[in-house]
Image (cartoon, rainbow, N blue to C red; front, side, top):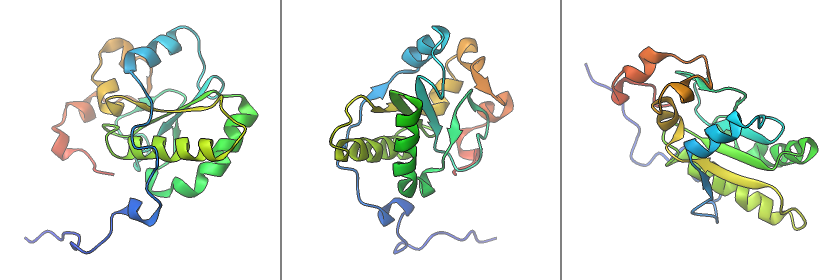
Length: 164
């Protein structure tokens, strides 16, 4: 049975948007985020957590996070920015499976947007190092901070997990 593949001339989804000027956005480690959560910092108040994976929190996600798929994020940046200011949130923390593609790209785009807003300097755009995979594999205290955690999902070989 033949498997259909994308044409080599087909553009990647992110090529429809301008490349981020911020190529190396600031980051936060899983340990730093876990510490903030254990110190009583609240998602939606102190920071905004954004899971960029397309399949709604497949395998689980960090409690209190939003699911904003990267493929439709760019046009939502002004609204997210306005919501952050209204809520008084000081950080937006982004991730995908590994935070090496979508997570870094989204953090860069949002950092660019923040810089374009001349007066605002208190809001940070951060990428979660290691992504949700690093978080889910971090051990019991990380898993306890996840909603809808599915141990079977994280035990499957990486290749058999969804690519969304």
